[in-house]
Amino acid sequence: AAGVIQSPRHLIKEKRETATLKCYPIPRHDTVYWYQQGPGQDPQFLISFYEKMQSDKGSIPDRFSAQQFSDYHSELNMSSLELGDSALYFCASSLTREQYFGPGTRLTVT
Amino acid sequence: AQKITQTQPGMFVQEKEAVTLDCTYDTSDPSYGLFWYKQPSSGEMIFLIYQGSYDQQNATEGRYSLNFQKARKSANLVISASQLGDSAMYFCAMREGDSGGTSYGKLTFGQGTILTVHP
Image (cartoon, rainbow over all chains, first blue to last red; front, side, top):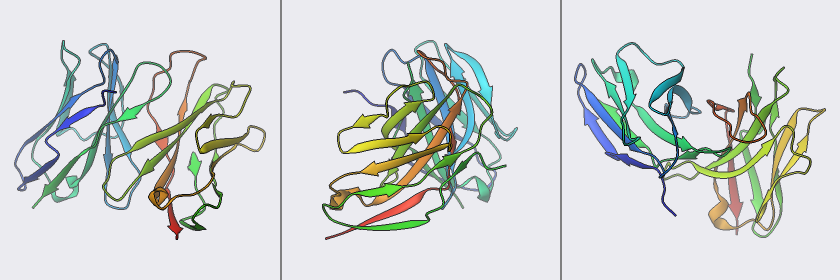
């Protein structure tokens, strides 16, 4: 069965640089979620989209923005990166009750 | 206030034995969903099982079952016949505002429990 695809899987950036993370949800899933998991932490909700419209917003810094495109893929744009942004970023998608996560993008800011 | 509490930072179990991972939750919403995820050391987040607050029966998926006690606000995960590959971090999560069918919304996670299966 198809799963959530995230790219890249690993990303190394320097402070103050920008990064773009991509997410391709499971086909026909209409909702996409972004989560951030810091080292040794539980995942924290950032933002979600339903049918290409922002549906909820969590503790997402103003330096971050996201959108969902007409083909339902989503991108998380991160600017002015800080050391504290180093984390595992998950995208998840859902159609009904279950929420399926992608493999994550591990972002390291040096 | 913590909405999801996992009080066991670490658990150990012998291979082929059953193990219960605890999860308690706090919500005033009558409609909610409870999830369990497995996170191996490789990092991916694997969906295991879901329980809706209005579901009449406890959820089961293969070797995983959810011991749902609504009055106690607990949703413990039971893994039967543990395998070495079950060694991982396990997260309990909740989504408030669940309806009986299609449901959308963010998940709130607990702190996780590291399970180690001994041969």
